[in-house]
Every structure is written in C-alpha cells, then in structure tokens.
Length: 147
Image (cartoon, rainbow, N blue to C red; front, side, top):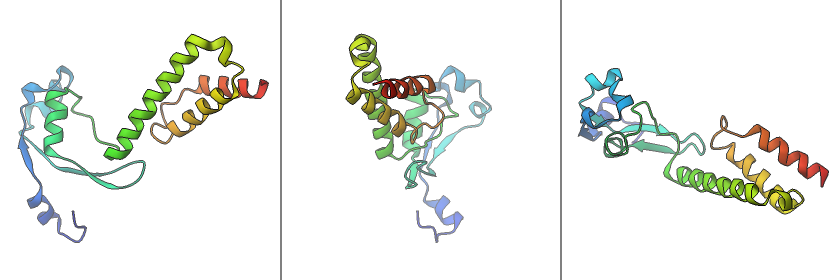
C-alpha cells in the first residue's frame, strides 16, 4: 500500500473474507476472538528478517486458521522468500541431525561436516534467534577445537 495514502483510504482498499470460527482449531475456539470474529481483512506486516513490506491476506488467513487449523494467535513473521528459506534450512538441519545420529563415530573427526553444521546453526539464528540448540552448537565447536 502507498504510505502516502490515508489510513481510511487504505482500509477502504483492504479485502475482507467471511470468517467461520467454527472451523478453527480447538485451541482457537477457546479464544475471545471466537465469539467476535466475523471476517478476515488483509493485515500488513514487515518481514522480520529482510524488512520487506508484506500482507497476510484475508484469503491466506482463512486458509491458515480454518483449513490448516493454525492457532488464531499466529501472526506472519517472514515474507514468502524468507519463509521458504527457513523451511529449507530447518529441513537441512534435520538431515544433519539424522546423519549425526547414524554416523556419529565417523563424523566426530569430519571437519567439513562439523564446519558446515556449525555454519547452518549460525545462519538459523537469523530465522529463529530464540530456537537455537545451545548444547549442539557447543558440542560442534568443541569437536572442531579438538580436531
């Protein structure tokens, strides 16, 4: 939306979609919003990683809350590009965890694997600064020092 537009003009341009709270998750049905929410409207936000302006569209909200059954308290945090990157990174971290579990004895001395794993952990902090595995990071750093 054009920043020069008045809030009223922006609100007039927002798209709304009828809400059906009966389709929400059980957790969301216990919220106060359950009794009052009648429509979804486009919600502007800024990507917390790259700062691009985005919109959580009314249609996306309907799908997110009524089909996927996500918590009504959920808010968008990333643009679609950063969201896709975070999903790829999460999947890659899972692959590294599985590989570590299966091949721990040989990977302990594999500097290439350990370095890549540590770099992944450091990049992951950009997406989820509150969800990093401090113990694994410390272990990998320790193994790199020993090698």
